[in-house]
Length: 57
Image 1 (cartoon, one colour):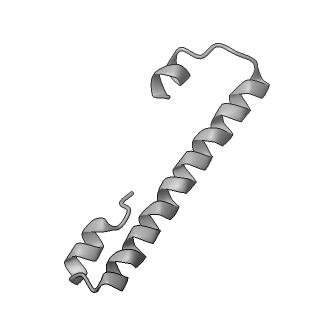
Image 2: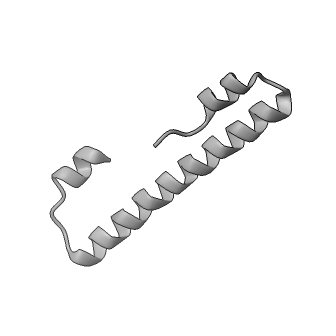
């Protein structure tokens, strides 16, 4: 997707749609990361494992 946006030449309307898709993907990744942290705690993994699984900036 990065290469597509690098060489993207289109209208402003399409650019906003692509940005919205990218933001949705980022949000989905953050939610999946938080679910992974919850699942790790639910399983009773060590705290350092749960921290390692968590999403990082």
